[in-house]
Amino acid sequence: MTAASPFKIALAALALSCGSVALAHGSMRPQHGGMVAMSGEVVVELVRGPGGVSVYATEEDEPLAASGMTGKLTVMARGRKTDTPLVPGPGNRFDARGLRVPPGAQVTVALVNTANRARTFVNFTVR
Image (cartoon, rainbow, N blue to C red; front, side, top):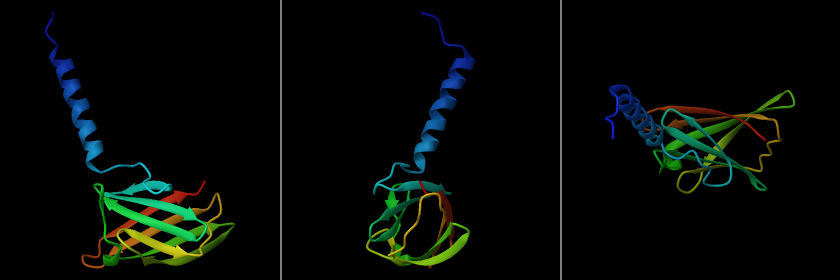
C-alpha cells in the first residue's frame, strides 16, 4: 500500500470541509410541498394552495417564530405588481389568504425581524 500524496490529503480535507459548510445552513428540501430559496442563513419555503399562499421560515433547520416578524409578498405577473401583507400564523408560517399566484410570476418574499430589524429577501419564479 502506498502513502497518499500531500495533494490528495489536502483535496480530501477541502472536500470534507466544503460538505460540512453546505450542511450547516439547514435543509434545502421542501418541508411543505413548496419551492425553497435561501437568503443568508434563512431558508424560505413558498407554498401555493387552494386557500392562498403560505410561507415558512427556518434558520439552520430551526423554525423562526412568525409572531416575531412582519412580512409581505410582492408578485409581478402579467405586467402588474401586487404587494400583499403576510399574516403571521402558528409556528414559522405566514399566510396570504386568498392570494393567487399564476405560473411564471416573479415573487419576492420580504421578512423583517421586529426585535432586531434584520431583513430577509428571497425571490422565486413560480412554476
